Image (tube, rainbow, N blue to C red):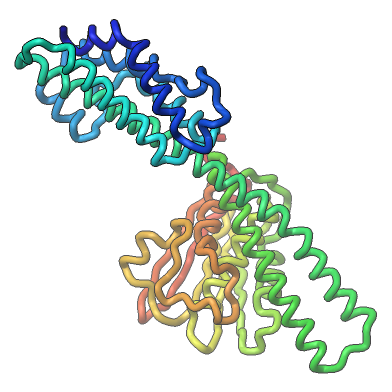
Length: 382
């Protein structure tokens, strides 16, 4: 008997063996009933049998062997993806879920081979097609499982970032009350200033973390545009970034009207991250130059610093999340984040407003980030 009809006729027997194997996977299987243990096994097997009966050319077989998406079976993919999601939910780890498919493959081949009286050349083709179907199912299950792991991690980070805000706010308010109500000497004021700077940097890190998680859980950062003056926002951001740094020498130049409608929180994050990046990677003179150029429909913001140029290899991944420059030193002042998220948040904030961001960096000219913001935020897709 060919393998495809063998699977259909013996599907319940095969699924029984799947269940017996799944029962041995601890500790998750100890709390699962028969239906949960069997999960999508029958659907996967029957979909694999149908896939084996589908005509396939030599080129399609080669493409499938190389992992391309030709001639995939929707029923098989949906069942396998659902299986991966549910196995993650009940507590199987990735190795345990993969072991299920390994056992399924071995079980089917063993039972089928035992039933054969004399192997035929067509049986080899059956085994190839069956292995292709199981590999496809395994790939879909693994991808779905990995997506659930990633989402769980992002949700955990969101909860962590949210819960960190309350103690940070308590520290910040306590330092403010100390300055206002207590008589502090010069040394104590320095300690309070250090606490305030540290709290501010931690707050920036938490904001970046939350923005990163939001971008991972959704298509783009949500915005709430309000009328604002970008010049005032730049002055406030420079004052905050340079607080406690006597060698910080910011220069702000404004040319033309720079009023518009933007999300105040995201613009603040964008400015803090660009200024913090310039302070961190700039030369020892700590000179950071911001230039605002207002037009009829848009505002150009450039942030420039002298110092070691960004190498070409780093430019390609500069705005990627969780990527840090090889020259980055977290101990230097002016660092707004040590998570490798700062420039990623800049890009996401700009995209949310329907703008663009570019960077040029040479030893002769220094490094310049240029942001174009429409005066009236127009997120892509709206």
